Length: 55
Image 1 (cartoon, rainbow, N blue to C red):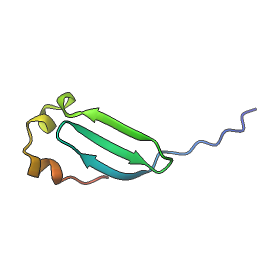
Image 2 (image 1 turned 45 degrees about the vertical axis):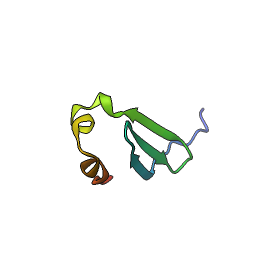
Image 3 (image 1 turned 120 degrees about the horizontal axis):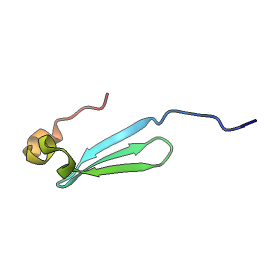
Image 4 (image 1 turned 135 degrees about the horizontal axis):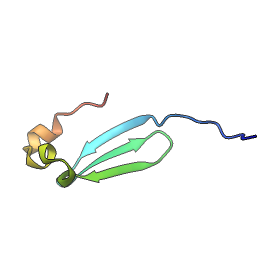
């Protein structure tokens, strides 16, 4: 029998820097990925990178 409770991660904040996208989760974890993994993000202008929404 398992006593672990499964909860889905909840995003608190997202940020795009010059070279990576960073997501802060409610449980304190931080997940990041390089923009180079996405040609759309790596080729976007800084103003375009700043215009995002979490859904």
